[in-house]
Image (cartoon, rainbow, N blue to C red; front, side, top):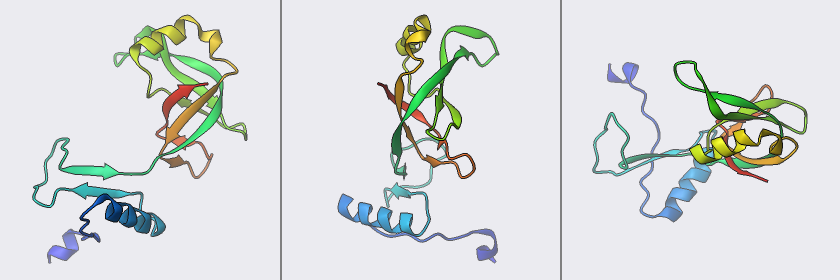
Length: 144
């Protein structure tokens, strides 16, 4: 009866990082997104913990900056800083990236917005979306 409610997933015991990388390679080839690496002596925790770590490889690419958006706080009020950068792929698909900036960078770039237009940006991401081929979960690495 338990198996109708719970799905058991495959697992391997790894004794070193070389074995972790080998498992990661195997599971990526099987179509999984990555691994959960856990301390075998730990119990599940409902909060963030170093005992269970998600391990997904990230990709990175360089895109053109074509615009920007002003930051809006959680209550909907605009702030005097950068919210996100609008990027374009080589195929002309647009997407925004707002994660990865420090508060100082947000203020600095917003004060000189024109500096951004036409520059390139290096972005890390999980994968490209299937429909538009734009980065999923993008994070800024650097403005070039």
